[in-house]
Image (cartoon, rainbow, N blue to C red; front, side):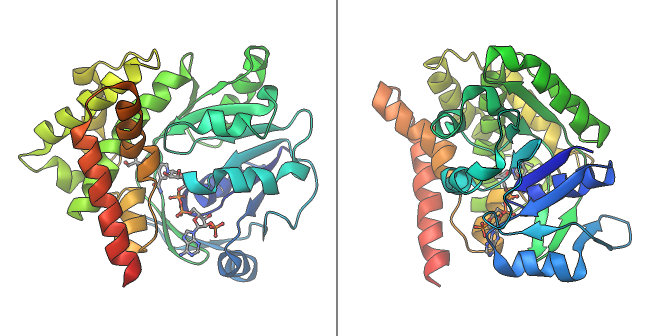
Length: 312
Ligand SMILES: NC(=O)C1=CN([C@@H]2O[C@H](COP(=O)(O)OP(=O)(O)OC[C@H]3O[C@@H](n4cnc5c(N)ncnc54)[C@H](OP(=O)(O)O)[C@@H]3O)[C@@H](O)[C@H]2O)C=CC1
Ligand SMILES: CC(C)(CO)C(=O)C(=O)O
C-alpha cells in the first residue's frame, strides 16, 4: 500500500485523498484548519457527489505537525499563499525517496518548492479536476477532470511515471507532461480567465460561457498571458489556448463548477490567488516592459473586492 499524505486538505486535497483511498492507498489528510480535521475524524469526510447519496468516508485527518512518519507520496493542495509554510511544516515526512507533488493553480510554484526541497523529490503539474468545500469536513464533487505532471530532476522521470500510474489507477486520469512549464502556463490561462471573471461577475463557468462578451474577454486576457509566457520561453498560441478553455464550459466537464476563486472571494470571503495568476502576469509584464493593462485592471478589481468582502 502506498503511504500518501495530502498536505492541504481543503476541497481539492479531500477529493484526491478520497479517490486515492478508495483505490486502496493508505491516505492521511493534513490540514491546519482544526475544526475541519476534527469534523473528518469524528463523522468521516462528508462527500456529496452530484446525483448520488451523501457518503461519510472514514479517512484519518491530522494537523500537518502532528504526524512524523516518512511518506511515499505527498500531494500538496494548499492555496498558493500557504505553499512555503506547508513545505516547512511537512519536512519530517519527506525522506530520500518521497515524491512531493504540487498541482496548485498559479505561476512561480516550482521556484518556491526548490527553496525547500532537493529537485529529485519534486514533481509539478496541473489538474482540471474540481471540488468545493461546503463546510468543515464536507466537500461537494461534480464533473470530470485530468492531471498532467512531470519530474523536476531529469533522472526522476521513472518516478513521475509511477505517480501517473498511481493517480490513473484511482480514476484521476493522469498523463505525463513532456513540457510541464507549458502545461502550467496553459492552466494559468484557464484560471486567469475563468477564475477571475467568474469571481468578479459572480457566475459559474457555464453561465460565463453563455455571455456574448466571453470571446473578447478571453482574447484580451490570454493575449497578455501569451506575451509574458514568451519571455519565459513558453509558446502559448492564443486561439489554441482559447479553444482549450472553451471546452470547460461544457457542464459534463467543469461548466457547473464555481471556480476556486469564486469560492474564496464570493462564497467564503477569503483572500484569493490573484497575485499568482493575473497579478503574476501584470507584475512580470511591468518588470519586462510588456504592456498588460487588462491583467493589471483585473488584479486591482479582485484586490478591491477582497478588501470589500473581508472588511464586512
Ligand atoms: N477548488 C477547485 O475546484 C480547484 C482548485 N485548484 C487549486 O487547488 C489548490 C487548493 O484549492 P482548494 O482545494 O480549492 O482550496 P480550499 O480553500 O478548499 O482549501 C485550501 C486551504 O484553505 C484553508 N481553508 C479553506 N476554507 C477555510 C475556512 N473556511 N476556514 C479556515 N481555513 C480554510 C485550509 O487550510 P488552512 O486552514 O491550513 O489555512 C485549506 O486546506 C489551489 O491552488 C486551487 O487554485 C485547482 C483546480 C480546481
Ligand atoms: C476548475 C478550474 C479549472 C476552474 O477554473 C480551476 O482550476 C479552479 O476552480 O480553480
